[in-house]
Length: 277
Image 1 (tube, helix red, strand yellow):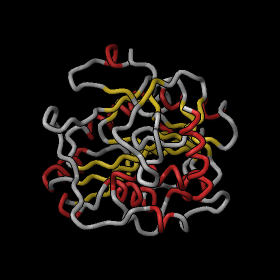
Image 2 (cartoon, one colour):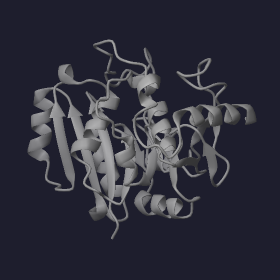
Image 3 (spheres, one colour):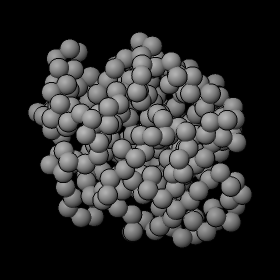
Image 4 (tube, helix red, strand yellow):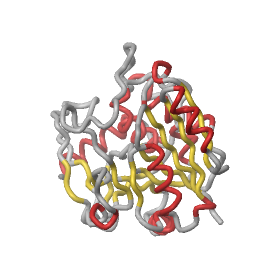
């Protein structure tokens, strides 16, 4: 049976255990699901979690919040140290809910996608008190409708989005909370030293995938739900803030990763994509 590696970076997030439980329980074949968790939290929470941990399919790294260096750094570390050549790779957040039989559904969707594809769209939301019957009715994810290239072009925020209506719609951005592809993408996504601003991570991964020859497709089936954070309204978890000045990704990333396509070509194709919307 083919295996799936699920990358979960958790920063002081009370939802991480619920996310692990839901990921395993909703899988049709939980024995093929391997989770790489980077738990960045207080020592008491780390200790309590490790005492309870009994599932050998969950691999764990830990550090204290003051040692954390951002979501992109944590995800890069997971890929470097916890991924073990599983057949498929799923990138989600530590505040996530899953569709029933999500593992089988994602594999089928990828098998039927255009060649050399990665599936990614922005997951719909769930609220903490909602049941599966309620949030699962939000059954279509969303995709960006950009006016320019974020952090490279003359992008004007906020991001605008629309529902994914097509079976497979080619897009230019991944969602950091919902990306599924072959395990081979891990090598292309991993960088020697992730010292970039955390909020630029989605564009970083999008470029790296492009340079490795992968195209990104959104499907019109929502298999992941995300607990979004709204400052001043829903402060259910702490959000990481940069401790040091970091780099904009563009100058260095042009030289990272694969060379099947260039970063400059990604910019050209992104501009055409924006004009087509």
